[in-house]
Image (cartoon, rainbow, N blue to C red; front, side, top):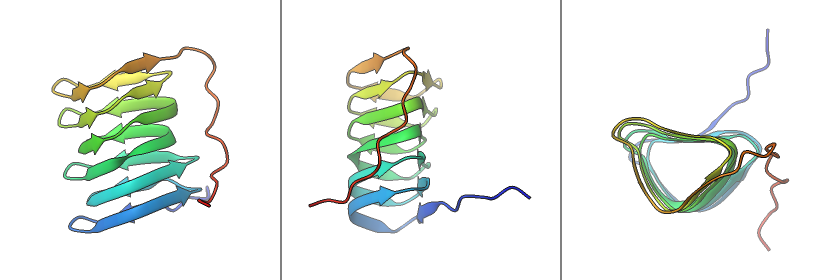
Length: 121
């Protein structure tokens, strides 16, 4: 049986403010304000509202993000997803109906994973 990485989940109707420095993926159904860095994936689900700059391997936006994205491998913005901020990634997929306001930078060079998370001073 393959080992499964447990996700960090911010539940619907839950509001979190602060800094998240993670080794695993995070799924956000509620509201988050602060900073997120992970070596894995960040998923903002439908109904999720996030105000932060994020750095991750893969980023999936089905809700609302106000902030910049720096993804090592890919970004996908769903049909109801909205991003207000700059996007930097080797690959970007926008579903019909997705909204972006900001600068998009597609770098086709070989992706490098995010650096080791560091704790704030």
